[in-house]
Image (cartoon, rainbow, N blue to C red):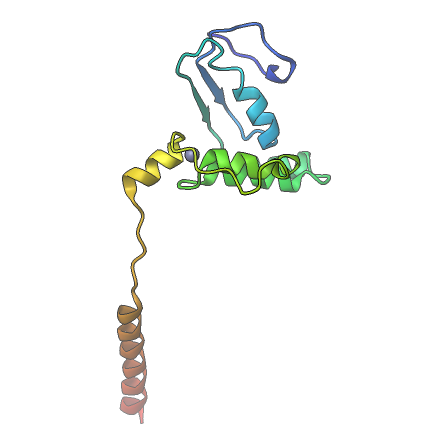
Amino acid sequence: MSATSVFGMGINVLDVTLIIHTTLPLSNEQYVQEIGRVGYLGQGSKAIIFYSRGDIRTLLVIIGGGQEKKIMLMALYTDSIYECRQQLTYQSFQWFQWLYDPPILQCMICDNCLRREKDTPSIYDAQSEAVRMIRIVIWGLLYAVLIKA
Ligand SMILES: [Zn+2]
């Protein structure tokens, strides 16, 4: 087990299987570079980010200076629950987009792709319930007005 804050400078350990971030990485580029240190030997590996909304605010205040878009893209990456993480990563690399047109397909192996397959999110049309609720409110208001009058 190793703990370091110098992944950007490289580490000389080949059997890294778990990387834990205790705050939001500054950008997707930095994050990909850091998690690229796992799985050198072909073994399964995981990357976990622990962060809070306060981390985003802190980074925006400390870093700022034109880096807001990178920080917000990283926050989008970490907050997503159904969007493919591989697609989100490629989308954040603007220099990479001209290489791949049409866009990258969903990877179907990241946690979000697996969650999407398991949950099968569906869209529920609640129009009739909404119309019924609006009618109830309107009739309630009319009734209140008529009772007062
Ligand atoms: Zn995916």
